[in-house]
Image (cartoon, rainbow, N blue to C red; front, side, top):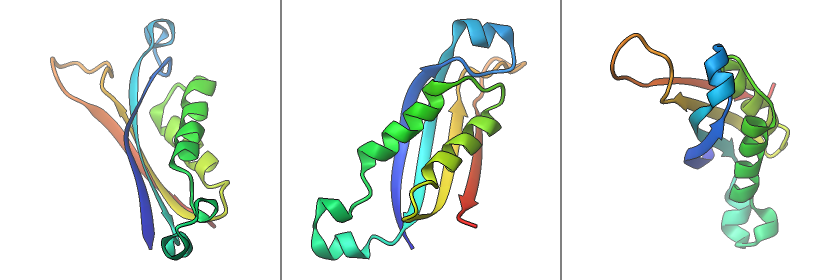
Length: 119
């Protein structure tokens, strides 16, 4: 199946389990892959047949910035749920990077990745 891929969408938000994360905020990065049949728009070259990249980006932004989540697993699930409201999208993969995660070491990165399909 065809894919649309958005990478490294960056947001400053207040997600996290610890009070400091809620108070100070931090940067989050989101990678998004959606699977859909793009053959119609590939043949027509007509914008009305397309899944709008800006619309996908706005949907992610609304979820990330719209409310606070304690866990990035829940944030990723909320993004997937919002993306799958578009009936043209069959499957979605969401990866949330939390570069400022409180780790007990000097360096490292934390990400979670989920995939969800239309039931």
